[in-house]
Every structure is written in C-alpha cells, then in structure tokens.
Length: 188
Length: 235
Image 1 (cartoon, each protein chain N blue to C red):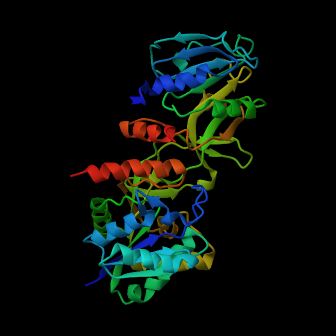
Image 2: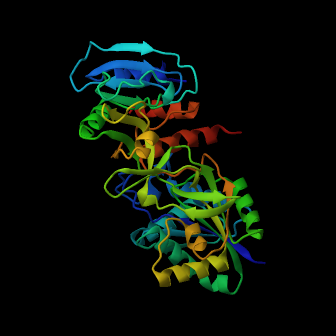
C-alpha cells in the first residue's frame, strides 16, 4: 500500500532512520520493523539490516536474544510497520519521556466503550477510564530483558511498563481507505 | 400499533475534537454531523419518530437544523444533561408517558458522533429484541487493548473485547425502568446498554459496521470525510 507514492513501510522506516542515536535498524517480515537505540547521538553512523525472519513472526524470531543486560544494546524500540504517520517529534518525545523507565509503550485513550461478550450476549462492560489502546511503539532498556523484548514477558516478570499517551494522528494504516486518510492528513 | 423512537444524542462538547461549538454541529462534508443521523432515521422504515437531544443552549439551533433538513417524521428537540447518561435519562423521561401507555415499545439510542447509520443493521437490531430486551452493534477490537493503573503503568492485557457502537436498540419499558433505578442508585453508564446490563437483563451483541465509527478527534473527522465521499459514489 502506498501513501503519496511511498509505501507504508518506507514511511515508517524513514522516521526511524531520522532518529538521532539509532545504531541499528532491523526489519523483520512480521512484525516490522525494530530499531536499537543508544542514548548517544550517532546520526549517520547507524547501520540498517533487512532480515527475513523465519519462524512465527513474533518477537521471538528477532536476533536479539541475550543482548540485554550487557549484551551490547542500550535500548530497543519496537515499532509496528503500519504507523507511517509516526513523526520524528513523536518518537523523540517518547524516548525523552521514557528515559527513566525500564519498559514503556505508547498508547491512546479509546473512543469506544468496550465489552466482553459470551455466546452473543454481553457479559460485562469494561471500565473505559482504565483502558488504553496500544499505538504500535514500545521501548525496552537494556536492563529490562534477559532474552526477549516483549511486553507480556515484561509484565509477567513484574517489570513496570510505563504507559505514555500518544498523538491520535499516529493511527494504524491497514487498508486502502486508511491510505487515503493518511494522504489527507499529510496534505494539511 | 406500538411505535419505535430514535433518540439522537447530540449534547456532547467535543473537547478532544477541539471544537468551539457543540460537536454534533461540526460539519462533515458540508452538513452538520448530526444531520447525517437525522436524515438516516427519517429515511428508516423501522423508525416512527425522532427525539433529538442537544445542549440546552443549542435547542433553537437543533430545531432550525431539523426544519432545514425537512424531516418528514414527527420530531422533538429536548435539552441534554451534564453527561451522556443524563441526556439519555432526559430523553427517556420525555418519552415516558408513551412508554408507560405502551404506545411506544422500542427505542433506538444513537450517538450523533457516529454519522453513518446502517439501516440494515437497525433492522437486525430491532428484530433481535424479540429474544431479549436489548441489542447492540459491536466489532472485535482491532487495537491491542490494555488496562492501566492510576499511576500510569500497564496492569494487564485485555483480550477478546468488543468495541461497541450505536444505535443500540431496546424494549422501551425495561430501559426506562432500568434508567430510573440507575438514577435512584447513583449509577452512570458509559453507554446505554450498561444501564440494562446491571439489572441482570440480557443484551445481545450483533456484528456492527466499520463505517459506524465514532468521531472523537480531528483525524476521525477527516476519516468521516473519506467515508462520506465513498458513500456518495455508491450507486
């Protein structure tokens, strides 16, 4: 899918490439992409890799196991490939606001009421004030993962995961109509 | 014969939209947002009358809009309350005499912030009332949903949730009774169905429509523009 002549993935990667301090950009087949980041400004010295990742397509496929806790990485950003309207400003603010956190994730408040249903009937209405929708960007510092940068693993290990409210402009682009919407946003 | 009323809730402020005026009056493709819903219910063969709920200060504006749109069905404009729940309550109380004498047996409660009403869906929602007192449209959550703590930390993942839409359909009597009970007990629901659910009554979930999304932010307003243009091209 393309937005004003560039693919959704290319637009997402463009933003990551422009991030000062990015050392390595790893592109997996699914989910995509992932970036490693140091706290030092290293613009222009980063390397990009495009890795067709075999296997399940989950984070466990990524070649990062064992690189936390002194394994060479300062922090890891995991970015969904379908967020082409993620801007450098959004990304930089996210990193600045999460400097002291072991794990952080970008979220937005839901517009809808959410319910749990069983057999076609409402079972319960969820408390909307406590709900958040993930916005496709998370950050793990080197001390937060022994093997895998994964939110559920971090949560089950008792590592605090900070929720950072993002910009509604950073919406997921998953259809041709989303692309037309993204073009409308970019044209303004 | 007992009738069906459509209650259109248009009293929201639209703070996240950054609107200086009531959200429902923000234009979508040249027409006030609420105008889309009003015209849809006016064209709906399953709806007999329309009740528009607006901010108290916008009542004349609501009446003027309906006149301009040239609605053919009987309509009323009433002032809303402090919250969505309060506006619902005001609407049901305005309809209470007809609900109690059984001349009005079904109500649809709809958010004006969802301009694209699917009339096929309305029919299915009303048909489902044969089996239970409430029926709502919903879609499986497309976003990954989590719950957070008050100190801004992730508490848990919330799998398998459904994103609820409107219009929501109800048997009018049970809903009025549930709303009066909620008022007496100090309960305020985030949507209409939750008022009925807390009384232990069943609410059916039917598959909703992707076009029936809610306009909350400026991006949603742009999405509405894209959808309106597509719908206009439909033969």
